[in-house]
Image 1 (tube, helix red, strand yellow):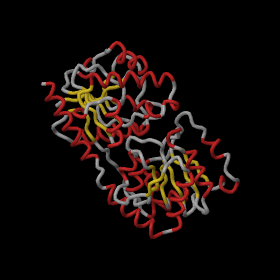
Image 2 (cartoon, one colour):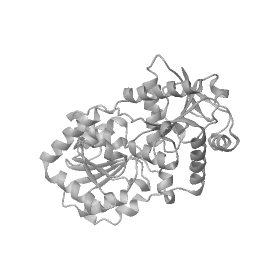
Image 3 (cartoon, one colour):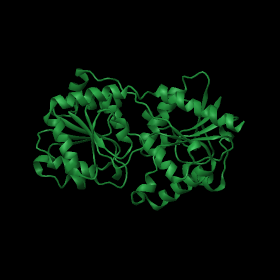
Image 4 (cartoon, one colour):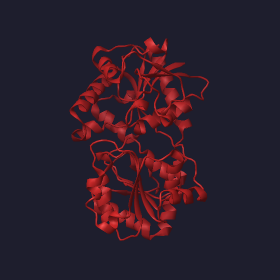
Length: 370
């Protein structure tokens, strides 16, 4: 089977989790002898940065991104096949909806723009709403990264017979004690740290995390890892901390993958109190290092820590976040239990499993079309 696989997010200013998901899935699907994947993207002068380069061949359409998205959404052209040649299925790995000249399998990570429209620009909302309108009409199958996202898609109007739960995977190398010692030295970190990782944007709830940190009775440092995103002034949140607490905050920005795995392993606890997630890579990546996790109830990350693999909090209550963090910081036995449960739970999330579910969706979509 030949599949057109959209990869435009690799060229985004902040590729984020959607690019990670697409690249890791492309890598796993590429190992299957029953599939031939052809990447699809807009016209670009240069390849994406090294860490975002696709593992499969990418064919480029004639239009640059903005023009392509507008043309896809309002003119319903160009055909993906004009770049790829004959295909059996189109996999739209992001929300941009190509014309359904072949059966379209759509991945939906979240519908945050419906729940938090105030966090998006007017132009962004216009794009997402049109994409949803087209997806409701044209998508043969919709792959949801979590049960929370599947339920939200159902509420948005997708019929149950088009929805499939396809959890994502984790690719993490277990950090060694030497790796941990190296990153502590490189980033000048103390032995006890509270780690957050992600793209700096409003729904990650960094304001709530910083407020919780200010309430703790601890000497642990707060370590923030990840690139700047949009509509979030991190310094304004940190500026409200007492001088002593502010001195214990380490803002590292983007770090290489090997360093990130070691930073997870070095952390006393990982805290991810996001308001809404489609899956929650940082949570399962921390679990894969045996690090205890505090995360949000009521969103997809709650699914990741079932079976005692983490502590759940109301992300809108900084006092509750602080209480959970204090419990882990003060109780090494609890931290060990959580870390062990998380390590075992993380083994359920493999890209091979994700690829198997996606390949089955391709077969289903192409068979229904036939």
